Image (cartoon, rainbow, N blue to C red; front, side, top):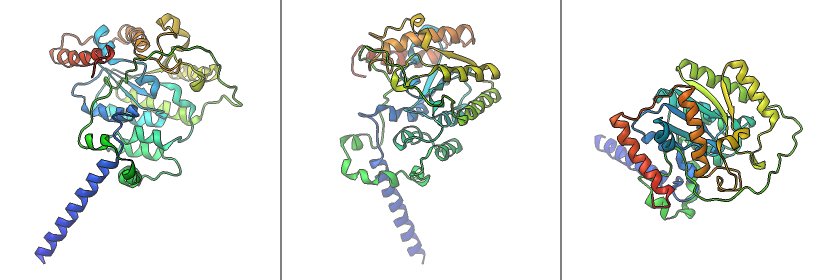
Length: 341
């Protein structure tokens, strides 16, 4: 009887290990293509805290460069961004982050408030799969999943990705047990230049009313930050291409909410010239997103606000942080200069 129990236990253990290995193998790695799928998971490698955390979609992870904030203002920061990050996903990432550290300010980009319901499994995966397991992740899954998705497929990704057997590449084997770092504290660098050549307005909408659920989550963010003694700052990145158009009617609703709640809101779209953005050189995709040159200008502009208005401390002179950020800046400059990271 004892031998049978031991044998069954060994078989069960081997089965679990084999299933775990297969799950690791078939799960997408996001190391050579779709790099933004790797961003959320990289946050957990951080060893030092951050005074500013940016949260939101591509308009944060391609617009704000933490190495620039450190070099110019001594501000420690991280960008917890992901592709098409929905507002409830941002809230639960904020909730998780504030359990792990105590930043002086959380900066949220408001573009995603236009979505009132779950959108796309592929984008969901790029945010949710990278999160560590917690109540925040589970609640985010329930809020985010489309009708076709199941919670269990997030608990056991093998159920979702088992069909990738025929699509496995060298990348899946190379990064089976480790991942390279693709970002700079969450900032995904783009060095290419593709000028913006047109100013196509957004198509007219039948109804400009933003979904109520968006304001519900904004209020949850405000209360969460208030409970943690953290400043909530709302922003709209300066990009305004027709693909992701930001309507004046939407802006007025955010402005009204922010004024009522006493939350600061910065719309950088009309400030592009003051920031120094040049749409012939500072975008890599025709004005949809900023490249590194534009991101550095925006970061420098906003960094001054963070330092002067919000009193975010200059941490330069702290021996540990100086060492950590010297390495980060060196890696950043190396990629910026076109060298291999």
